[in-house]
Image 1 (cartoon, rainbow, N blue to C red):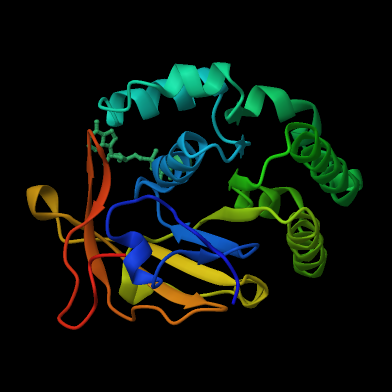
Image 2 (image 1 turned 90 degrees about the vertical axis):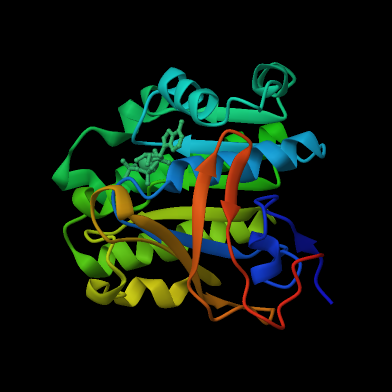
Length: 246
Ligand SMILES: Nc1ncnc2c1ncn2[C@@H]1O[C@H](COP(=O)(O)OP(=O)(O)OP(=O)(O)O)[C@@H](O)[C@H]1O
Ligand SMILES: [Mg+2]
């Protein structure tokens, strides 16, 4: 049986019966502001605490901003700086990859390839086994041909698999509403899909998550609410018959 990699997010590992199968490349898909970056950060944070090195590659936000937002949301995580200093938790913000991201339509697949090999070098250099990419969908804007985009996504997934990294690859969706969500063909390439939703309005807005698929394990089919608290993200309810304890 394959080893399980725990996300460390309260009650979420129970949704996949103990954790993500090691080496899985999982899409973390959600609309704007659903907590994708924070969830990715928290996964790396808990794993870093357990001695497993992780890197967050962002093409969205600068390193300082990512750390500042995480510290502000998760104010009980007082050892973030220590984990960063000891290179257990590595944040590689968008300022580091700007040179790869310059919009260059003629060379877009080349740019992507360069970005991936840079990532590959970093993962090997730090001996990282946990990876978060925030967000692959930025590449979709860069690569106009959908076939090229699928090929490039496939090659990225292949590289991460080869490196035995257990990864969350953030995919930005245009909607956070479950009913309006459409999974485009590239989702078939991932080993797993975790979808984050927002429903309701104003103060009655509810965030919820669903495991759409997860290769190599049984998983919950329920859509469960979650909240972002100072001590981490917490999935609120599990239905009867699903064990809360690991
Ligand atoms: N201190 C906090 N306490 C509770 N919730 C917070 C706190 N800080 C941020 N949030 C919630 O987290 C959300 C932002 O989280 P995050 O940046 O991870 O979302 P995202 O899905 O990555 O967004 P984007 O689509 O902009 O990249 C905010 O919209 C807010 O709802
Ligand atoms: Mg984000």
